[in-house]
Amino acid sequence: MREATSPEVTDDEDETRRVAVPLVWESTRLRYLKRDLDADYRDGLKIQARRQKATVLQSQTEFTRTAPPRNLPEWAISSTYNH
Image (cartoon, rainbow, N blue to C red):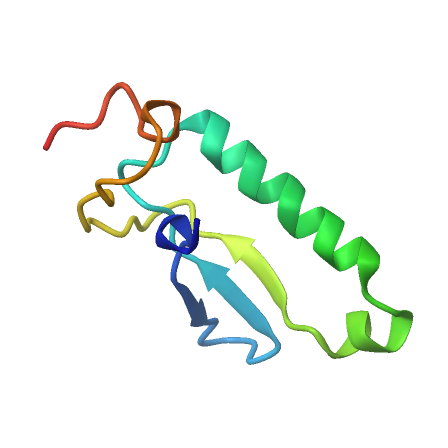
């Protein structure tokens, strides 16, 4: 489901922090699923790798406006998304 990965940009104020820019069409269910997968991934990292991995925050003000991929399940696309 790589097509549903939010792009990340480096924070201008802190280079060790990355900001994930949500997809405008992303459903709440997909957003929570991605958050849980990210948490499981971080939990699986060894302590040293966790320290070296940049912190990723969700942007609250910006959205990526690309259209959703055609092969995503219906639940992954927000019911409020207008093409």
